[in-house]
Image 1: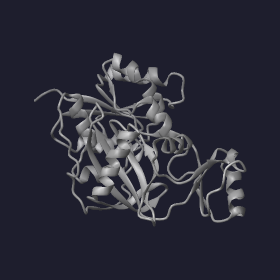
Image 2: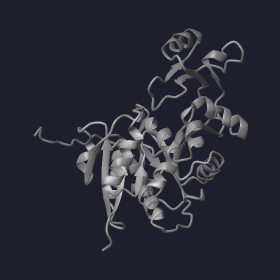
Image 3: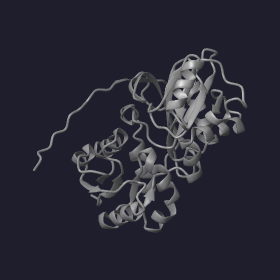
Amino acid sequence: MSAPISILVMSAGSMPGVAVINALKGQSEVPVRVVAADMGNLSPGFLLADGSRVVPSASHPRFIEEVRQICREEGIQVLFPIIDEELQVFADHIGVFASDGVRVISNSAETVRIAKDKSLTAQKCVELGVLSPASLLKEELGTRPLPPFPLIIKPRDGRGSVGVYTARNQRELEFYLDLVPNALIQQKIAGPEYTLDVLTDFDGRVLSIVPKERMQVKSGMQVKGRTLNDPELIAYGVDMATRFRVFPRGNIQCIRGEDGRLYLIEINPKFAASLPFTVEAGVNMPLMLVQMHLGKTFEPRIGQFEAGLVMMRCWRELYVRES
């Protein structure tokens, strides 16, 4: 049996971090040694992984150097960034880690920059001719037409549902704009919402698109959903992943409006919190990325997943003694 490959999973206490650890530890195709990293010892991922390391915040001036040191000490070959706060930092240092022999599973620095700023994403949609909700920045009020109510007000650099509000009239709009200083104002599109998980090879060839209907969402995360083998959604996912260069992993959020058209809501250069759902449907994206790092090639598996799989998410408790 070959020696296990050492993998570092960042933000191991987050839901996507735990999902990546479980996806890697729950398979038997590739022997792995997973090291979990987080900012504190009370991280659920520390109990699920083979090793654990405490790291500073991604904004700390020594963050990258300390993670590099961990990689050297642990013999890390593959590193998975997880949450928004660290995505740009790792994307900007892909080459530095590569010189150490570590592959960072990250989108390009430019893709991350556009995706994390919802105003830049909206501008890119206009540039590419991609249908999306009409948008304008708070400071553009009075210089551009206001979309019809109801409106969504959200931070241009927000995550999940933090700071996201719905304004039904001018009075509510003014109230919520006081709460969100860097607000993006966006037309609210009514209709079913979807997360399209994306996997490509390292050259950008799309290997898999897994559409999931967001049947119930809490705090921005899908808690009930179902997989759909919808040819239109799959083709849309391939198209958006290619246009926005969502390589090698990410997810696309869209809404099918009352007019039947698909509206792009967000491009996310990261694993969705609903990644376990995708793995259960038969597409273990973290594992496939590790396998590709080891030299395995995959032919596209478009539409090859279990459709009609319904997810209902619930809490799970982990316990540890203080000692």
